[in-house]
Length: 73
Image (tube, one colour):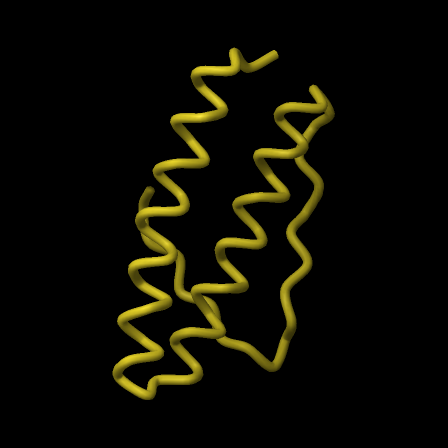
């Protein structure tokens, strides 16, 4: 099981990176990019929730109409 400090660090990292990317996309009027970033953030949060619950990670459900580009964390 993950320690509270590890969870907090992971959430902080995800928030800083993903929200920065979402904000940049919105300011640049790039709706598709912003939606991809939101979808990626939701996937990452679900994986973290699975890790916290000590369950094996479920396959991420992605809207097939939204293209998602994954970048290394």
